[in-house]
Image 1 (tube, helix red, strand yellow):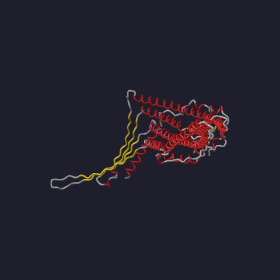
Image 2 (spheres, one colour; image 1 turned 30 degrees about the horizontal axis):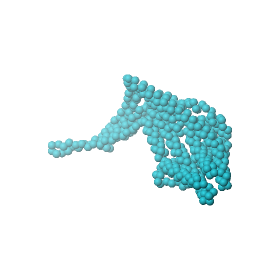
Image 3 (spheres, helix red, strand yellow; image 1 turned 90 degrees about the vertical axis):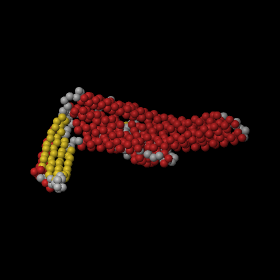
Image 4 (cartoon, helix red, strand yellow; image 1 turned 30 degrees about the vertical axis):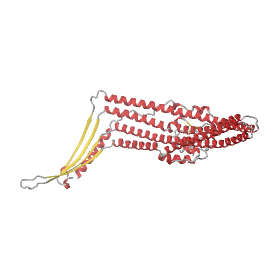
Length: 491
């Protein structure tokens, strides 16, 4: 037994000594690729707009529960359910778990593998007189094998797997951001349908009164029958539009159910009053966006993985070294199995080197380099696309904010025109055609204003997504767009 332990120590010492060799790396040093957008000091729209303050960049920024900025308790509850039940998020979680397992598998290759073998056998011969001569044979051996990472191939494989796992983690964050963003967009579109239905209900009541007025005037011989027919047409068309809005609402409700991972038949959302809160968004400098946006992070980690693949391909130029050690014993009795007289040990060393491969290794290296360049190009394009998306949403946000004030003014004027023409019609000063025209214009102005308000909300959602998530009041370092000073602040 002592001999076995002594030999084991010797074997392990020999393996540890060989670890000194594992210090050379042939892979290129990784540096994050530069992009044209990363050189910009500020957003284009920020330079031309007043009231915007840049946020201070920081590492590992918490994206936060950005949906709470809209101050809607129902949306908050639905967002919590999406993160638990959405199937796209569930798939991203599974992919991330798989990537982590691959990292552990690659890291295990850095260490020696140890195995134990045990055998036992009983044999015998039968003589002519029928007697048996049985014999026993027992064996036990402990073996170790290690391929030292002399050229860094295994470490590059671990680095590649780690980068891929980090890319999967970014994909998971992107899946969450996308799912909640889609939920919020559908939710506010549904609430817009609710608001338009309420608006049409009020309008239908007004049209019903107008229809009754024209009917009474026609019965009294004051108005023509065409006035009654026009009022009836307008009333029925408004009712038909209400039915269409109910269909639109149902479609959004079905979409929300799917995002929640439930069948549409098992989900319903009651109509509720809609408050068109539009949170102000602080602008971060480009480096902040690079740190926060999940698709950019995933693309950058893909570049790192591709860079490690070059080192893996280059390692094939160098010899493959393998060390082995074993110690064992054979005996006819179990109690004699670990006796020093029956011990056997061995140490092995092997080197394998490709002498001629007709350029196969060089082709693999070139292929890895080309894959790296391709991933760099995709990363840079992802960054440019991200900056374009932010600039587009900033433009849309500023434009819609300005339009809302004008649309609100136009709606108020149309309401006054409608009321004045209806009063003048009652006084027999104008035809009913003028009333119908004014009523149609007033309804269109009201609906346009409602649609503009929800467009501002969905644009804010798109901007938050383009910036990679929410923001935290603790680091954003300043106030926000002046016309949104009353909006909820991030906490």
